[in-house]
Image (cartoon, rainbow, N blue to C red; front, side):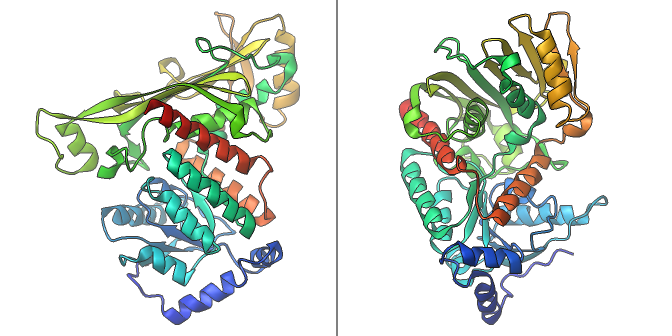
Length: 456
């Protein structure tokens, strides 16, 4: 059953919980280690305005307490969040067992800080104020698990630097949700790029012919967990949501870094932004009404232009990269969001396509530039099959090789949220992340906000 309390946690209970979970939480790492060994991970969800806030609860986790403490303003966004989790609890197969304690006063942020009912704050919602929520949580000793983007403009990036400094001083775990690292075709693209006998080394590329290209097409109207997605009206206000250069592009910039420079600590000085452009997607009256469920703020016959499309060209350690995101209203019948990616090496090109021929599922292809077919066969059979059992190669008539992957690996975007969360929990239990994660998060948001600044 889904328990919904407007404000039923007593002050005494809140204080007791805060003492048990947060006593000395600003002290050095040994106190955090003690908490992890004696108390469950308790999630606090702050102002869950984006459906991603609910998706992390599509699965249960042994390390996480089943009660979620929610602090948010009353309204449709909160009701949608609660409905989504209720749906997970009530589904016939593998139902979850989340219980929710909810505070809905206008002072929800102050109440979250005062009660400290959990040790990990989850935030997914309005992007213009997200960094302020994050700073408040970190300053008060709470770890943070945040949906992208963390910031949407250069001023936000300056706050982000402060946030990571606070997290480091207080030994808190601050992490963003990068689901695309768990997509199997991207994983295999990265794996093959790290085998010199197959890929060689990454090309430097040029502005006209980048070494790495990542493009994605998304749609405003779609189905999530089997139901039509109703987007909040602020989603179409780029002052709140962020523009096409700082939102979905976060994933693509992250993949450029993660694949081209695996485990390398990057610096903002490694980035040179060359070109950046913003373009609108127009919504008509009926489309706006369908996707928001609201009366549009414009007349019939008029349209709303949303600066949701962005393209940037930049170099990272001298390697040319191009990142592009486009939005349409709704995918044609039988189609879906699409992704295209190419990594150009001195011996091979690694290409991900997700079109009609691939049944709109991402598929990795290898185009050899030299006579190293045997090396590719060995890479699959002797190296990668042990890590990813069942993968194989098919040689196509055009000379390319298709990497065939068992259906069990194609879990879908929604399932990736559980995979990222399990990764976060692993870091939480260890008390640390890989050395490159924090500096590379900073480089990622420097790149997106620098592109936005240039396009402006």
